Length: 302
Image 1 (cartoon, rainbow, N blue to C red):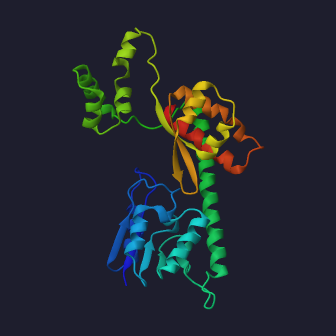
Image 2: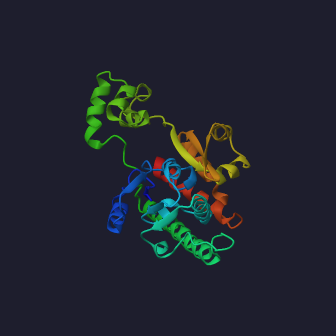
Image 3: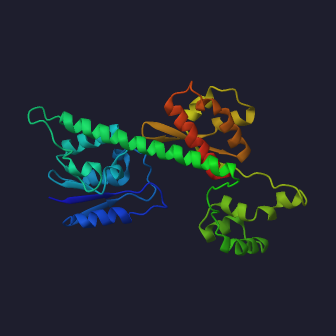
């Protein structure tokens, strides 16, 4: 009987160090490890993730699936029950080594009906709902913190893709005739990052003369589906409507995001248009989506 270990992190800035510590302390014998590529989305259904699908294909009846904590494998309550049904179908055991689920036998079934025990289902749903509440509260606190920082004049946001230590070299190479595409390959960054580093050296900036602001560059941003649905029913100007129509739909489990490419001004205008979603007339999911969108706009273009 094989021991199948599953690992995942939500962003490429995170590491599996904590998961490794928990799993090492568990003393799992001859583990077969399946680790998702860094940054695999939490919103993606576990059964659609590449490495977990590979794990299920590899597994044989009687094998045990190990993970450090439940939320490395699943997020929402629906996902948990879906995964447990598949594990039961394939006759696989599940062992959680840390957190609230570590003391539970999540594969316990009724001896006659074969269905998940009602007490197990209740505890799974309750603990998962508590976890979702905790994450929602963390997002709200993050949003409040960003607003407080803005009030003090701190813009925050992501660090430049081109490190400060390399900016001078990039600018020198550009002045010597190196193309933006070549510099992007040299430094393993996007062309937009290079354009940002050399913005005041670009022809459109120098042609405008000193003292003239450089034109805005397009920014790619993922808009939550509930925000996009609301904006499609809202009166927009021609530029905003065209931006929305040209967005690329990216499926996220049961929902989706709209990948929108536009200059920062249009992103801000679209954010302003969905302000009504913060009101009491909207449902909680819409308010949550609007807050996430506001955070993304702030992080990417402020």
